[in-house]
Length: 338
Image (spheres, rainbow, N blue to C red):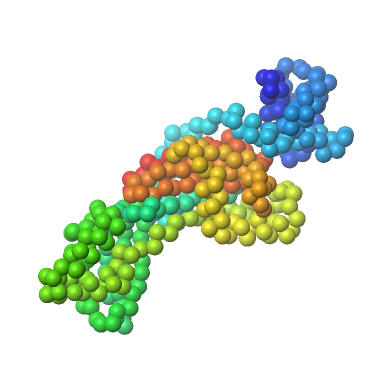
């Protein structure tokens, strides 16, 4: 495209984002300062139609930008800078969250508040987490609550039933033994070393290690490495002109309710290097999400976790605002100490 064609195309995209209506040459002409005639603009629009950037729903109607046009528009956008005070506010608010789960939930809410679209945040653990500490609490009926906290601030809870009573003092000794010897180790390293220690002949004669063997056999430190994911604002999609039948709209919301499908979506479209914004205009064959666009970023965190920060919205969303929100929430998330 020539500079003039690109300028006119992006004016059409911005007008369509604001109104949702086909854009005519007179509308474009009114918003320009170079006094181009409607006839000249119509000629350019015809060329853009031929190039696959615009479509014309009716002979006498204006033009509608295609996915190709939105991609051109997005590529021209620079990330709008938030005021430093606003960025500090995001960091301050997230720093008040004491767990990864709370940060994930609050950051998705922030994205929704800033963009009026669907905010998505996922914390995806690596295959080997780093132990911060454990806590063991005796419950009724020979049960024990095992709490494992990893360095990424994720808390894993599990209740196990034992065949015999383990006193709280014994649980305290086991907790101290694990925390003293293995804090800062990866869970895979702990399993290897702890298994070796428990198999040594001397462990048979140690009462505390005997009790530890019992808890270990019940899955102590055997935590589920499940991603933490939160999505906010799906109601913002209601009422949008997504060109979907009622059945397809129902299918869309069913898809958004499945965390596994959302993670697959993030993995598929957020393949850029860490920290680099990805913008997917129209999700193509990711049916029934074909009418939506995704803006996101992957952020590496300490402790072997990746956070994925994203906004899902209609193709005619405010891309500048959404890109800025995703980038800055990602930066705020990344800057927090683990």
